[in-house]
Length: 287
Image (cartoon, rainbow, N blue to C red; front, side, top):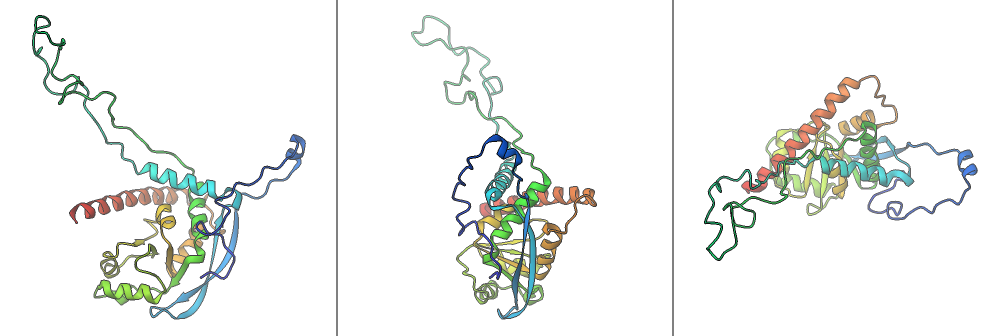
């Protein structure tokens, strides 16, 4: 519901078309000035009430990569996040680590069978594993500015399907999934399609009311991640979330002043993301 022209990962062709190379000589390439690597677009979004009526408007001004590099930046960010989710705990036992097999099963000769020195050979059931997986560190490094630019670019691409709503934490003192689904319908959202809610604080009533909706993701600034942004068909922001995005991913953000706070934020964000995947896995197994 944005009023300014924005590009979307789902509708724009810039992410599916390959730019034509410029036929220039080396001297012309050196003399040609390169465009800026980061741009920003001021977008006006309407603010909806709990009943679904418009009560005002707000602006969102985020940094975003230019169209010719946006796909590469977001792709690197999402592949890095998915790779860092791998725990690398898969492990198998070799024939030297499997218990047993110390005694020769039968004599070397005069049996008519193939010679065998151990019952734990990889050729027999219960034996060791040849070239099996061992614990490995799959973590991949990415620059903080590049990761932040990927998130802001993804949010900017989803502004066409973004809704801003007033704070509704107090509306769910008695959590009911039926009321939360009614809220989604008033906002023009289909409960059967994926949606992501970004709030500054996740109240217990809101969490309990929406956790039974399988297509719904509820995020806070600590759990904001690139995958849930790209995976959703609709993005719902609260007024506090808009202020956070403008402050954190906006044009006026300066990272050199609060480097220590930035490191703590990144570490807690990764830990909370890992905890979120663990909770989702446990809920799937118990269900």
